[in-house]
Amino acid sequence: MAVDMARAANRATGAQFHVLAVDDSIIDRKLIERLLKTSSYQVTAVDSGSKALEFLGLNGENEQRDSEPASVSPDHYHQHIEINMIITDYCMPGMSGYDLLKKIKESKYFKDIPVVIMSSENVPSRINRCLEEGAEEFFLKPVQLSDVNKLRPHLMKGRCKEEDQPSNKRKGMEEIVNSPDRTRTRYNDGLTLV
Image (cartoon, rainbow, N blue to C red; front, side, top):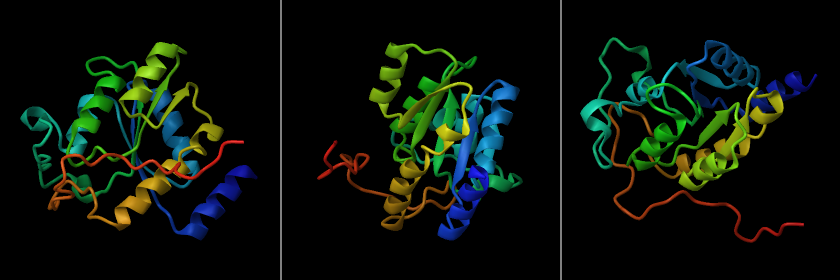
């Protein structure tokens, strides 16, 4: 019933968000992919931080803070797909989710994409470090539908920002902002906590 209501709400708003899911565990990757698709998100799933960077065009020598994302070879179907959120496991071989988060937030073109970290380990210092580095949420595994439902407000913030500027597509990307001091907007001004 809740799944049907979520699908109906997504259809009513016409919102089809695209999430890049990153997890080295095939079981966890398939679970998050299924939960996201159940909630009417478009999903691309990869098994490592380096593959996520490659998908975004931030791999290899183009990882510097102000460099333009690299083009993906012409035979890849996903080179014109816009990513609205990245959800990544924290503990992965090679590049951790925290390292991926830092690379995304250092990127001139992708720093405003919401990043969510997941982990099976409840380590407060790790959680705080990720949130301080710019993660929107930190989910404990196994991720559940109630966790996925917490993503929409972060995506809606991003959607509002996208209407005011060019999209974050990798190929043919325009200059998004010339200001070096641009940061993620926080929508909590004037709100009162009860």
